[in-house]
Image (cartoon, rainbow, N blue to C red; front, side):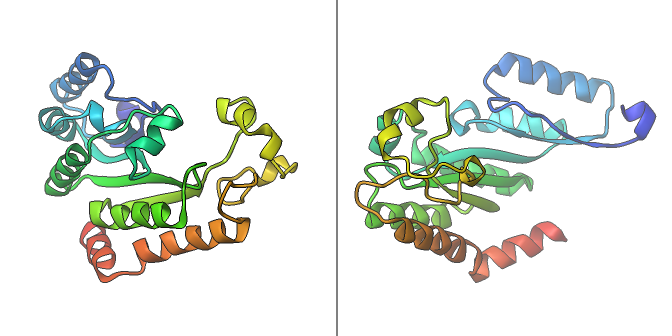
Length: 207
């Protein structure tokens, strides 16, 4: 591709790109050995990264990384079968990304079954404090065929599959109304993006 089209930006569509540490190191070593000049981005879990591996990936062209945080509460994540990444490790990896100039995109979910207004606000505050370059917030959505869908099937009120988009409440939450969930979703985007520190960070990356 580089011989044909010149320097490119590659997006690796692998949700656990750095899971196999040996494979990633070998890939990065070969990119550097062959003198390829493209940049790339990937998605992974932060607990599958460390500072050494991150440096190796950056030297081979890594310029952006996306990952899931989802919620502040470890207990909330464990109840839905997620494996929490220690907050200290998250902060360490993001700090190193900032030093290297790697753009970071964090994903968050609001409206877990045991979520309250207070727990969602705590997650939003954590997203601001963690300080990824950008963040995406979505409402918990029971996609057909997933364990969550089978678990809460009786609570699902939306029948239009096109509205299972992560921004529309599709089931009756135990404690929060659909309007409350959408207000909290709007609050998350406002509180993350409408602040001087975000603008300063964005302008630094843009230039």
